Length: 350
Image 1 (cartoon, rainbow, N blue to C red):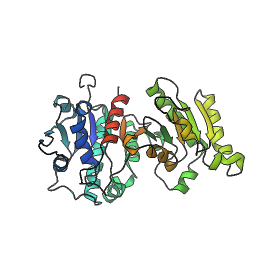
Image 2: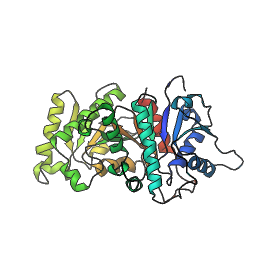
Image 3: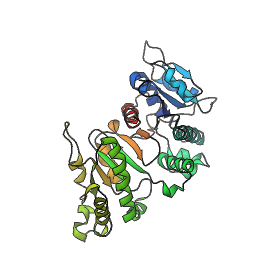
Image 4: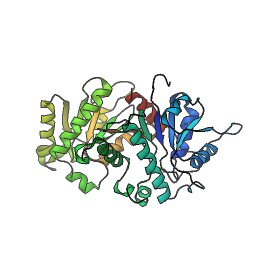
């Protein structure tokens, strides 16, 4: 594995009070071939607690290996967890509670990994879930960002010396049945509706086209969801489809993209869904706002979903779920989505 991937992959801790450390430990335990050459940007006592939490009767706890540089992870043998420590806690933070300490630790891990990726020291980063309220409670600079996507965008823009507005990014959620990309991400529904502009829709189509063309080796077939019920029904239920979305689609077609719509949002995802190895009508659905696009993907199975940030000068994936404070510390969290995120990070970084 290391020879095929000469640069390691970083996995960030996420919120130490949530399930992130536990699913990271399970991924290293249960998928050693996939995680070989990966390392965790985190905190030692938190990760040790996680390995003890998932320890099976009669088995040794997963060994931790301290590293000081990313490339040292490539020499760590399987069935071990390489850790590059960001901070030392006297005791791990309590499970299931929002804390500024956990938010700051999570933020620091992401910043280190993103900067390492931008410097070319790692092939990709996989981010375990952080808690947005904890990130905000951490104070500056982390409280300026609603989540991973915005923080990574700001770090990338600073690295390339551009204003954030000139480095647009989009969120894609994907599993083996469906991909969806969002025009807007973390904002209120009222703001999300206002964000459906000609420029935003066309920009989303361009970013999606470029990103998936690199993955698929061909131009993706993009289906665009309408904003209103029945895609506006010819203007009866709203004119956004007529005045904004359709003109953006027409320009995208003129630029050589394979795109159609706007389609009724209650059926376009079914048309795009791949079943039993048979591809759907579209390679990806461009959705107008967060929940419109994420509910269909998550309904198909959170354990299969992967979040990918498109438009960044680095590869970033994450599991398709949150911190799950309600089950943190119980040893029952499913690592399947994180494992899929690691798998996709490997694919995208080739």
